[in-house]
Image (tube, rainbow, N blue to C red; front, side, top):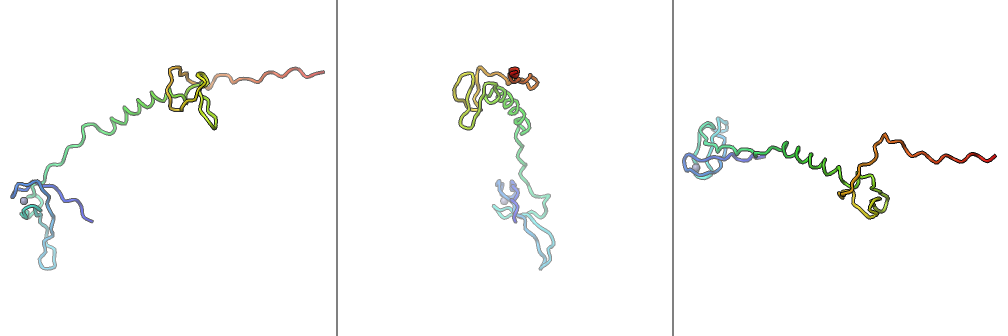
Length: 134
Ligand SMILES: [Zn+2]
């Protein structure tokens, strides 16, 4: 496992380059670490001396802004799609528009879009059966 080496602007050679972290040993005992420029080999004795390159600024537009405007657009589109229209007829083989009598796609948008009947509209009642014969 190696992490990406940090970027520096080397104080010794002036290059925009990377710095390598090296452990410093006294015999077999680790006594510290130093930071070495990969371009010129200049060693910095402490992390505080390393001229790290400034981190890049993040994007101006946040993800949250983008997502919100996309949702508004999607909601508007959904309102006029054929599959939300009262004339939309679907069966196992095809999707049809009952008004224009032609095949449609669920995602089609139509100028004659009409919203489906409200749920609280009274349901169609069956024809009252004729009086039983005497
Ligand atoms: Zn250097």
